[in-house]
Length: 602
Image (cartoon, rainbow, N blue to C red; front, side, top):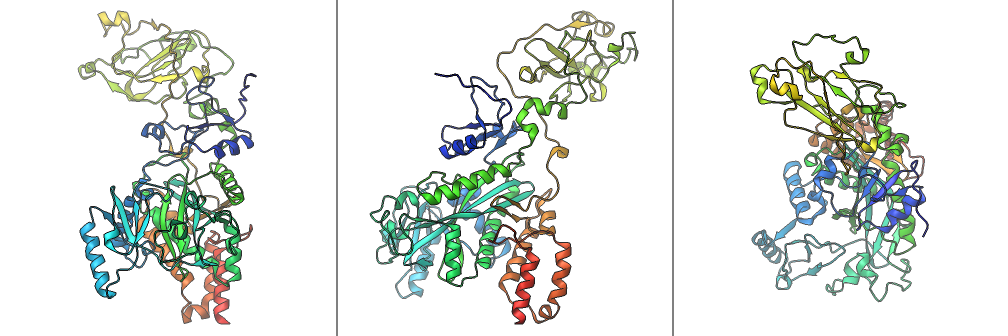
């Protein structure tokens, strides 16, 4: 078997054992290399992809050249009971008129009494009929455990579930129920930056919708994992065709054929996505270099109102049909582009050393033994004629200063009162002793010093006091002595300590469009300002509500008369583009509003 040759100029991806195969295929097609733990160091990768959640340490130790495909603590919207609680909280805060895109959910068994009261009230109001209800396990996916009932005697469960009103009047295509899988990328929660992909999937039930057969999953559920097992999956269904999926582009063609205003529908879906993510955005901790792909499931009813069904943590990336190939490969490629890799990221640790070092070290020389002279108040500033002993600030890679005071510091012994860090390489070791003001100690360097090979570097913190042998006898009078540290050989690589700095983070407006991903939040200057620093949820929600109200409602009489001038002024001050489905060259939002005003004049 031929040995694999590693290309050091390629980006490297690391896959967890549960990661989808499509991710590997797409990245290899883009020229990436797959991480090999036996040949490469622990941190020598650019992208780590998992279908499950990362550990907290993974988020803490992420480095500038690395990306993770999940944000921390997003369970607040991806688990059904947590989503129900968060939406209820936002509904109480901002009103049910805005957060009315998800049926009220009752978490059982905790809310059984409340649900029973609502069920009884419905039966009395509707003369013995309580309507239709749907029951879903809180932590299962792919349609498992879901059932629909009308009579409470049919409600049976053996694990926590949520019960909601069943949307019994869905929009149908040739009698078949469907929902939309919307791919949403959250590039950052701080500041909140949301993209929605123009492509997506339309998922059909494989048998015609029929309320008289509530126990038929092929009529009421749209999950592909269920319907591909149905008897009609491969049958050519009227207008739907074989299988159970369309692309979003085909769905848009259907809307056009029915004279449905798709732009308003899309904006309503954007609103659902944004308002849902705002429920958890303040509670998600800052985690640089994380990008997350969510799958929002949206149902459209007969009145063209979109409803949120659920949010998927790791949307399925398996390829079951031609629509999957068309949509999912494009989504993945555009997601990688959104990760915004730079040329220096290919070098990984080597590329970022010069950026984060305190100074400069010649790359052409080699490491030589380092002698440390503890610094004292009684020591003259210049003691040696050797120029190499006069350098008080020496460049060392990936050092994070953290002064640790020893017990002797309280007695005024400042000769060696603290230890800042220890830098260890496989060939030799450099111990740096702390000094006043948190500066680097004075080092005597016999010979030239260079940055060691980046894969040989390990940074560890030492809490104990380090003194030269002579200093142990009389620490106040022996601080001028020199001590040579022995070489310490460390076999296992450990990630360097790294502290994120604001100046290295991306600044400015996020790109409006990356491939098929369209920026949906922030969408104007007000929301851009509200998303930065500490997210102002109140202002963000108000702006989303204003935009939706403006697009859905006819303009007032005064705005009709002055609309052209008002919109021209808005076009100059707001550089954000439209949030709608559309062609490659998207019109400005103000242009669409201008068109709306002209249309109302007619």
